[in-house]
Length: 342
Ligand code: NAD
Ligand code: WQD
Figure (cartoon, rainbow, N blue to C red):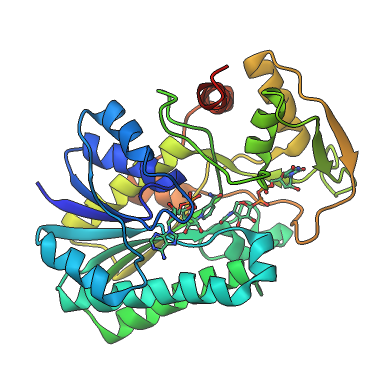
């Protein structure tokens, strides 16, 4: 069977994607430097799938080490590049770390792929490239304008996409699929893998589940004075397992489709926008756990509302994010209870 190299594969989305790839029959080699994940994730993957993926603990920005991986695994037919530093706030404090890691690792990977004649790359991008779409572009599709990034992190995603397009223009052998994720949430239904944020969670749902677990006193809702129905921000929360399945579809399309463009871009969302307050209430309804919260001031850099038009991914990939939100929220809560032994 074909082998997929999953770079950043012990991370949140990479680990869930590895499970789906292996269950689809692919062999997987994970490359990860464990800068934002634990090697224990491999045990969770094995417990779910019944076998462990191959694992190489290297920095994918290191040409020699990455070149050695491609020399070792000569059956690699495609690469999924998840590895990046992804904390928006941290990127403002440490921009050079973000530019080096997020841009350097992609350039190194593309060079090594060319060296080993591996043509297929799936790249993790983000709806953050759209900034705050105007009303005419909501729900946001792939033709919506790219707007000036609000953070170095968001800028690295925009530049990454430009690097891929320029590399493809120069090398007609390269095939790329750019996946713009909206807001991934939840955990595998087995509760054996999930999101493991370091320190105080920046993202909404991990903060909610830690509050539900009693680790946090209350949730702070960053603003209810936005121009939305209940005043809180709106996002497109997509189940991480649905998101992972989209990567399998993208890889399969790259390996089989004759009609694909050299670089294809897909928005991966549900197509439904949910406000912060709605998500809190949905979590309470899904789990029976009350979430204490208070309304505070807006968080700098937050956009007001964004949700996807996933029609292109639905049609071209034959993929749809259909897991009901309460099932997704229960998966997050089950994972939190698993890691806290509750
Ligand atoms: P994550 O931090 O859980 O996973 C990233 C993995 O990459 C980690 O295991 C980390 O150790 C590894 N890594 C980082 N730099 C590396 C390097 N130089 N060499 C080897 N390994 C390295 O993040 P995630 O949430 O799974 O996100 C995966 C990708 O999706 C990222 O590119 C991120 O920007 C993108 N994305 C995430 C979200 C989200 O909300 N989680 C939304 C949109 C896009
Ligand atoms: C969602 C909503 C907050 C925490 C970020 C990155 C994006 C991507 C996904 C990497 C917002 C509100 C949050 C809290 C709150 N990451 N909130 N209290 O900001 O949409 O996207 O993560 O690619 O690039 O920007 O996600 O979960 O941080 O926030 O009220 O304690 O929840 O204001 O409206 P966001 P988020």
